[in-house]
Length: 164
Image 1 (cartoon, rainbow, N blue to C red):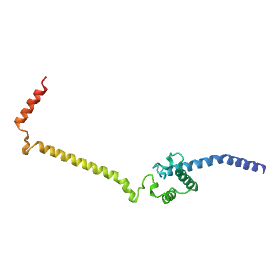
Image 2 (cartoon, helix red, strand yellow; image 1 turned 120 degrees about the vertical axis):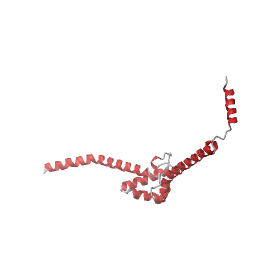
Image 3 (spheres, helix red, strand yellow; image 1 turned 45 degrees about the horizontal axis):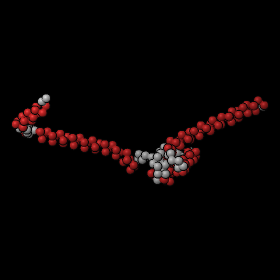
């Protein structure tokens, strides 16, 4: 009986000794999770910085938002529930980046569309310039528009100007 009490006492001692380690690890995991979720939101003070990186001295908005986020994470709310709560409270402007669904998908697609359209426009303009340059330099049959007399005068002038 005494041996059983000693074993139980030793187990209780070990459990109490390990309690801070478990609590610290849980708090660290919650903190990491809160940072990951908070990185998806903007601080609503008007600084347009990510919530977890707002560096305004005395910014009460980020402090309040981070407190709400920490409480939600501590309650064990899912990321979706936390996101919905923030969107209901602050509107869709709270997103650091637009969601990849619905009408916001346009914001993700437009840079690629603009790049493609710009490339096509540049290729079209360059091909038109090349065709215009070829047609201006030659006539039907490939003959030059510059008369032989003008060509000879230009060569003579170039020779005179380059003589030393």
